[in-house]
Length: 158
Image (cartoon, rainbow, N blue to C red; front, side, top):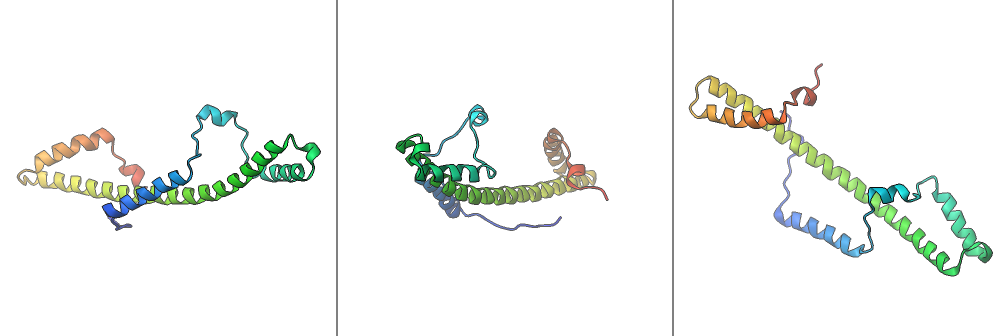
């Protein structure tokens, strides 16, 4: 049983992290949540389309005859600036989210591995008639069976 992570998160630090997330939400009050249907209907500006949109904005800002109107141009400039800044925020949050998820996964995997060892040891103890261990085996066994054994998936055979 390898222990790859040994860390603690104090309540004080957890509250500070949650407050920092609340601050991010407060600083970005204009954020929206699109439905899956809205996402399908929205023309996305991906990496391949950014040069097209940037050039169109540049041309429209320098040639009034091709700009739909000054207000739309101003809004497009705001959108361009916001898109770029939020892209930076999105990338950093994605990196952080991935690290939080991976660390949580590893901590959970280590806890589950420990629990399986405890279950196996309780079965050995019960087979040796150690008083009180049969009820532990029964209690843990119900939960273990309900979730299915992932031993084969967790540890590939060589």
